[in-house]
Length: 237
Ligand SMILES: C[S@@+](CC[C@H](N)C(=O)[O-])C[C@H]1O[C@@H](n2cnc3c(N)ncnc32)[C@H](O)[C@@H]1O
Image (cartoon, rainbow, N blue to C red; front, side, top):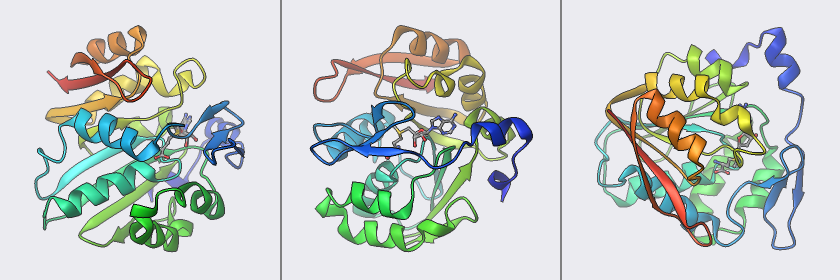
């Protein structure tokens, strides 16, 4: 699989396990980036608001729809997308490709996802294939094909041969994880977006919006989730 070979530079970046600590509310927090994996308020609702609504999903779903994501983390965004796909009654395949440098262990993912009881079924299915992620693409119920590509996204996205109709830009906060918001990477994201494709992110940081616009997206600042006043929606010009 394309994501398992690392050059020396990538090896030094792929420095080992994710390094998770837990907030009192049970939310996983990255020690490396000092930032939570999802909203301390309600991760699932935030995901739905930011990444699904932000990409005009499920309305844009069509058979063979392709989602790509920066930062697989716990897999919560994948599960939210899968649930929306099933509910929308789509019958064709959904392709979900996610780029991750510091994979969580199965036990960490299980602990993080245990908070989302409505996703218990799909969570069990995801955990049953967790140890294959990054090694080979896996298939999930309802025609969903998941591939996690390991390595620094600054290398793996430009090398990717696929395209996406919608991107979930879910790095940690730009100030803490600037690598995932670098212009070179966002340009590679744009190059791997289909005509009329979209991207969404929880941040409305000015430099992120400018970077997206310079990469070729029409960018809109829209209401964010919870305490975040704004988020960003982008459509490829
Ligand atoms: C906010 S978390 C993603 C949360 C995730 N989407 C979820 O549903 O749980 C950000 C993710 O980006 C990953 N990451 C940070 N820097 C990266 C890089 N340069 N390349 C690839 N992944 C990176 C982190 O390891 C982390 O899993």
